[in-house]
Image 1 (cartoon, rainbow, N blue to C red):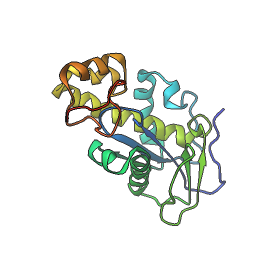
Image 2: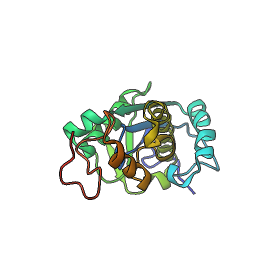
Image 3: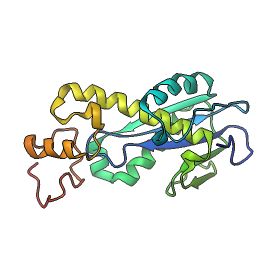
Image 4: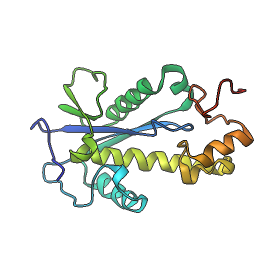
Length: 199
C-alpha cells in the first residue's frame, strides 16, 4: 500500500524522472503535489503499470492533483552535463513549474541537489512507496513516451514508438545500420562494441 505523505507537512511534492537509461531523446521529470484525501487503487511505480494503465491514470492525476509540473532535458544538454545532472535538472525544472511552492520534496532514488531552500528526502524505490512519487513517475513516463512517439515519425527506422529510445536489440541494430540521429545521446555507449562512433 503506497503512503500519501512522508513529512506530514502540507504541500509535500513528489518528483521522479523517466528515460535515464535511454540512448535517444530527453530525460523527462515530473513533480506532483496531491491533496490529503487523494486515493487511487491502481496507482503504482510506472514501471509496474501497463501503458494502458499509465494512459488511464494521467488525466486522473492531472485533474485530482493540487498541481503538477513536468520538464524535458534534451540530449544536447545530457551530453554536456551528464545524465545524473540532467535528471536532477529536469526534476528541478518540473518543481519550478508547480503553481504552489512545496514545503517538502520527496525524490525517487538516492541522488538529488537541494532545490532553493526547500527540505528534501531521497527515497530508494520511492515510486513504489509514496503516491506523489508514483504519480510523478506516471506523468514523467507518459510525457516522455508522447515525445518519443512524435520523433518516431521523423525516424521510423529506429522504432522509438515501441522502444522509446531504450537500448533494445532492435534499436541497436538500427544504429548499426543507419548510424545516429540528432536525437541520440552522443556521450552514451550506443553500441556494446563501440570504441569510436562516427559522429
